[in-house]
Length: 70
Image (cartoon, rainbow, N blue to C red):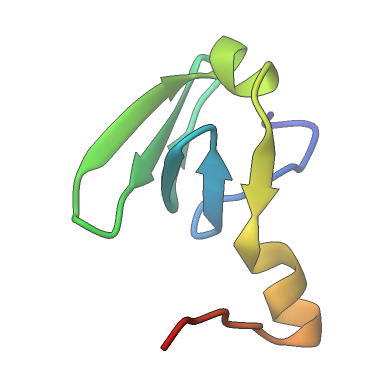
């Protein structure tokens, strides 16, 4: 993950059912801070086998699209 440039520190991502801001990426783990200010530690082996959604990557280039229900 460090070399594949899937996400960087500061990006908002979703891995499986966990969504949060990337606060640390090392060779073995990735740490996310959720919107509830919880730190979630994910093993990179599990991250590789999960679907990763990066909300920040395109938002920096094209802007942010928000979905809401009223």
